[in-house]
Structures are given as structure tokens and as C-alpha cells.
Image (cartoon, rainbow, N blue to C red; front, top):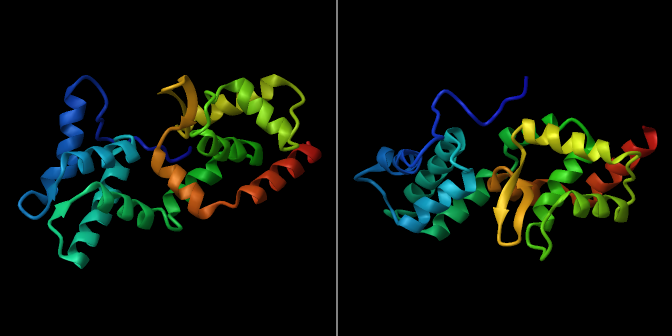
Length: 198
């Protein structure tokens, strides 16, 4: 069974979720570090409020603050800590491996790459991009099954975007990991090979 993001500390639910996850960021370092509200919120955004990832990123922020001697945590410090955290991160590598196929991994990479495009990342756009990259589908159902599996693994989700509902990475921090650790052309090549062998 794949290692999912959720653990025994359930931070989902009504409005109390926000205050509980904010406390997960600020309480452990109270009196030692002061998080600016935007920095605290950026931690929560990058981690999608998953407790393990919140703690991991906050630990990286704490280590960075200890080295630099800074007591006030700004959004820039959070971004620098996030970049350090995702360098060859075993947690994200394991999740990447759990995707279960090269086409599924390519879909994750596409969700990250297409996040800034003007069109919503929907099934039609993903299918069109796969075709453009030379990764054919025998049936549209294959794409629907891939997306369903990635959603079950909590790697991809339908998110609200300025362009409406769109597919995206469940955890933005994984996008940073992808950008640093995955060669897009290599994954395209592997997905093409996988398609030819199917």
C-alpha cells in the first residue's frame, strides 16, 4: 500500500483546520522564530497542509534560520527552505515511484508544466499534450484510469484555478521536486517506450 500524505493527525475539516495547521507551523518555534503571516501561509500552501510535509518544511526553515541567525521568517526564507528540502528528497522519490507507470509520471510532470498555461488543465488538454509528445492512447479510458489512480494516490487532484476547475499536483512542493529532480525529456522518452511496448 502506498505511503500517503495523511497520517494520524487529521487536519482536515471546518474552519478550525486553518488555525490548527497554522499552529503546527508557529507553536513549535514560539519565542525563537516569528513567522510573518505570508510566510506561514506559504508553508501551508506549498505543503497542502499535510502534517508530515509541514513539519519537514518547518524543520528546514528552522535549520536555515539557525545558520543565518535570522529570527523573522519571511516568504523568501520559506522558498529557500523549500528549494533545499526538495533536493533529492526521498519522500517525493517514493511517491514518484508509486505513480506506477511512465505515462502516469508524465501526466504529473505535465500538470506541473501546464499550471501556468492560459488553458485549464483538463482531460482534453492532457490528451492533446500526450498526442503532441508522441505518447498515444489506445482508448480515452486509459487516461481516465491513469488520472483516477493518481488521484487515489493523492498525487493529482482537481483544484480551483483562475481558469476554473483543473487538474494539478495535490502538493505544490512536489512540483518543486519535479523541477529539480526529473528530466522532462527523459520521462517523455520513457513514456513513448512504454506505449510502444504495450
